Amino acid sequence: MNPNNRRSFLGQAAAAAAPLILPSSLWSAETPANERLNIGFIGMGKMNSGHLGNFLGRSEVQVVAVCDVDSTRRENAKATVEKRYAEKKDGNYKGCAAYNDFNELLARKDIDAVVIATPDHWHAYIGIAAVKAGKDVYGEKPLTHNVHEALTLQQAVRDSGRIFQTGSQQRSSKEFRVACELVRNGVIGRIKTITTSFGDPAPVYNLPEEPAEPGLDWDRWCGPGPLKPYSSVLSPRGVHNHFPAWRMTREFGGGMITDWGAHHIDIAQWGLGVDDSGPVEVISPGANKKRGAQLVYANGVVLTHGEGKGVSFYGELGEVHVNRGKFELWLGGKRVHGFIDREQDKGTSLDREVVLSEREFLKDAKVKLYESKNHHDDWLKAIRSRQRPICDVAIGATTVISCHLMNMAYWNDASFKWNPQTREFAQGGNPAWLTREYRGAWKV
Image (cartoon, rainbow, N blue to C red; front, side, top):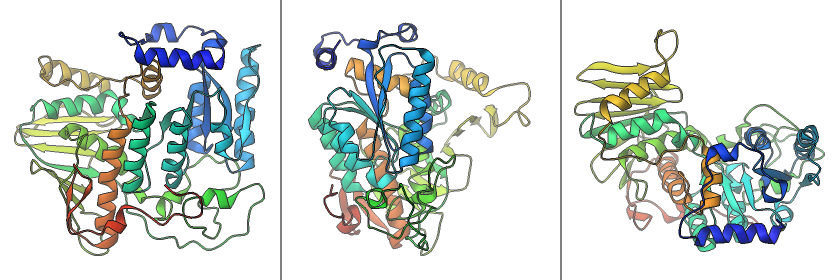
């Protein structure tokens, strides 16, 4: 199947009366090289290194290009790909290209989809460019750097007809889905409050300048953001095995509010059933505070950024607590099912406690949420079926807007009312907070 025929196949799948969804048992078999999806990767830091390793193990895709503004990272990624395929001795493989400029990667007609895992301030610009180039996208969370970008990217995806999976992978973990189904089906009664636990909002850029690094295109790294003095805290030289702290600068990220907050607020809103709306009011905890900001929803539920167990739903009849690898269901003041760790909960497991909760309380559930067992699988299935994935761009937009609103409360010591339908301030707030000043040609 040549590149044009591959695109024809994808287009026909969108128009077919019965969507083409390949079962996982078939996907696990070896896929002929000329029928694989060609994938490119943009931003080859720690996060995309993980994604790359996952996709290199899948026969239904072929990695053909990587991109990074650091020459060492991109050449390392290129070598990783070519070594892996050489070991498989695939005679059809033509090699992996490595680019400094993502536009060169997106211009290739033979690339069907891209995985974007750059710093946050690049997410929207590259995502928009990708869907306009006809690529399906797996885009890391948080979806964007600001509210304006979230709305613009969502519209671009809809206009293009492309598939966009936001990398909020907790939606593809069973403990989070079951927790939200327990809430949505009223098992703990009417929800009164929610607590989400994660770290601090980001300060302004205050890092000392370091000597420029050879092989790093720092101007392009800064891109749509301001051209700040170089710091290895933001972009460590070469290959590294940690998450750099660029997110802890307002110019390039949103602190832990758009890091773990993007994960946990996403689950809170899934449990509330507000994926298509969001909060109606935002309350500041007071000047210079790092905890206590609140999101208020139309049904009166108040979500508080505090200390706790991850995502905690408090209802009239009980509580549900969920985090990665952790789950608890409380009813009438008693712990009915739960797993925190092996030491505390010897003799049981996370899977057992989640399954028991599901069997006991959800066997006749009226609300059944979208079930995905693997975030990457779900994206690939969506590409073939042309149906929206579990964390479509619109869901990513609702989540990240809530995160940005919370940051506004912290950064400006401001409380205000919000219209989740028009995505505008209803009372208070400053429209300038919804966007940013863009540098040069990199304007969203």
